[in-house]
Length: 494
Image (cartoon, rainbow, N blue to C red; front, side, top):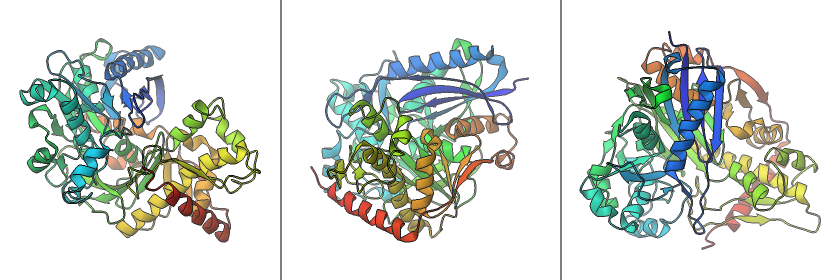
């Protein structure tokens, strides 16, 4: 009898394969990074073939660690960086261009052009999304219009499109072309009500239907793996990474929310089986859909640059040697020294949605040292999160009583304490912190009966640590007021 579930976690900077047991405990993990390609300012690409190689490698490595074989796995789930766009040949499987990453801003002119005829929210009623460089539709269009012959090949049915979940699934199963409704909801081509591709949207974005994958639920048996080391294992769960974290945190009741601290920051709140349309810069998205059940929706606040800012000061400034050093450096000073860092490297996402904003560091004096800058880097993540929480509370009418957190940065105690302080509410870290992969494992396991139901999953969730607010109210408001002032300095730079 298979005692484990495998999860492919295909992220922005790396790919992992994690094996979980029935209690949700990690028994094996392997991870490999892939190259970040920057052909021009604002352009961000990945080599999709390299990502598939890394996926094969980490699956094999994770199994080897515990001498596991295919029959030990009850199922495999997939979770992935969302919006990142790949177009490939139906026959050869070869991508026609590097993948355009969610952070890529090359479609800014196309966004402005579409917004001139109906405004930035012209498709929000159907898609829950504003016009922005973030989403997949305009990335597909750019590839079809800029790769010689691509549009004609797409219209004749020779090409296939997918976000990274679809590309990994295609290769893992030997040609299965589908996506789940959470990933489809990030393309700006799916109607939130029908959970199907929308003809009006396809016409507006000039995307031929022939290249699009079939939309399925987030938890059902799609097919079997054909990769040798996992051959015959059912592939039965797909969730975009942030929705996977919501499932991994077992936020199955309306009003429950989680924030994932990774390359960016993504706060999702479960809003139930009816989409809530935002008036305050949030996104409306599909949270998950389990087979045979109605879709559940969420409000989402997306912040483009958080953990990536730590990488940036490491790699571009040489301020630290490794990412974990940022906390040590920040602790050399008692506060930020009046310094604020707004990391609008590719514009601002929620709640502003300003593609023409750019990063700024403000408040510098002769007193400023690298410790102050390090603290400003960490505080930027928490301050951006507060902006998202406030907007989400206005939209939902629900005041968060606690913020569930996950992602690579939640091990940073200084950041998590400041997050609790600036929000003025508790912040909790779960016992199992790999919630993105865990959510994919949960979805896959539910589909094959490995897990009983969502109540079974909720019983497994527990708290590792809680941070409670300690900051005085006047200090909290002073810091936040200066942050809001700093953000305005980044506006309309281009």
